[in-house]
Image (cartoon, rainbow, N blue to C red; front, side, top):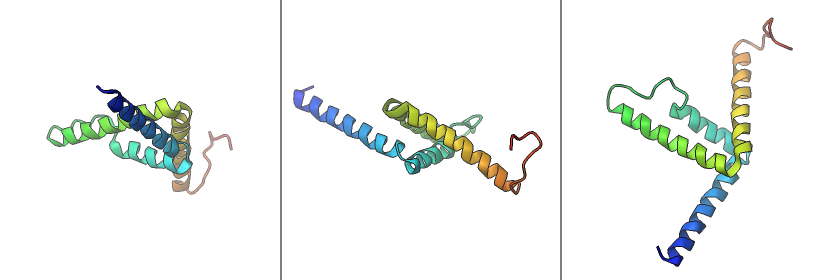
Length: 108
């Protein structure tokens, strides 16, 4: 590979990392990425459907796993924050569904 190609490749990689850092450093970006993770089925029991849809599911999972790996390299702390924020949003949504009632085992 020529020096020029190496410089171009390094510049493209640095730009990709900077773009991803910009997204993951903002709460709106973290929510967006988390929605992509949730929609991908990453945390589903199995992507295997027994038909050709399996290949589609595996492709989505591969994309999301690569995105998360890249995000962890850029900012592991913000990926962890994104996951924590997602848990809080899920808990808040559950409370909203129950009408805001506190359960006997809650700390509130």
